[in-house]
Image 1 (cartoon, rainbow, N blue to C red):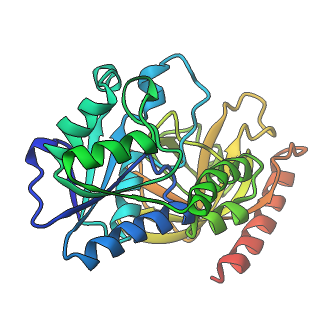
Image 2 (spheres, one colour):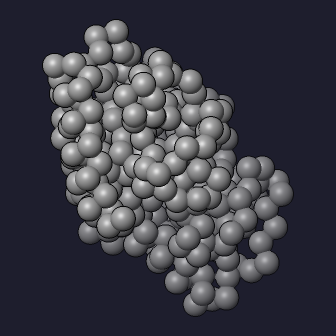
Length: 309
């Protein structure tokens, strides 16, 4: 898959079958749509293309809206889309100027003249152009003017995409990573860089890597203790993750920190990715560090069993 950030460099080798959207999470509903794009491209010996936008349009149009929480960063989205066989992922920089382009000009100047669309696959609820003025009916009309085909995505696939995105976010905020992973068809992931903490974990025999998540808009699951897989320099490790305040120590700030089993390397300032497998329990305030250590040992035993290590 080729990732393109400047559409002026897009040079397809065959007819273009394209869909567009944010595709946050690239979950099972999105995958059905993208597999349809790949299938249609294969039928005509063409190229499958996903046009997406970065930053997320809401971040540009409503910069003071802090409620937006995304399931995937742009880097995570690239990896997930690549696994589906899409030929080109075009990441169009979203700006206020782009949002003001009339629907007809967007179709002519971008979809036709720069992306060479031959077949466009979109849903019944698709909106485009200034003030979201264009819809499926308008796109059908433009397709006749500019000589490309429009194929409507089944309503059921669109509804699944909308509903599952909502359900995934709700499940993660409730700590139900099992349900979220089912919708995603993979384990939910957060990524970041390891930074120095207070060293309390080391002092009680459970050293942790404190993770500064890469994006402030990335959705973080509910506070608590989780069984996880940890990836450092492409190596996979088992671990247990705590999200929250670690209330046994009253001066502790909110953090994301992971204890990696059977691991003693220095990982400060390294990139780290964490896959959520299961939620073990809520955070608890223990009567001192000894009681905390007793619980952590029990957590580790249960997590090792879950991860089958």
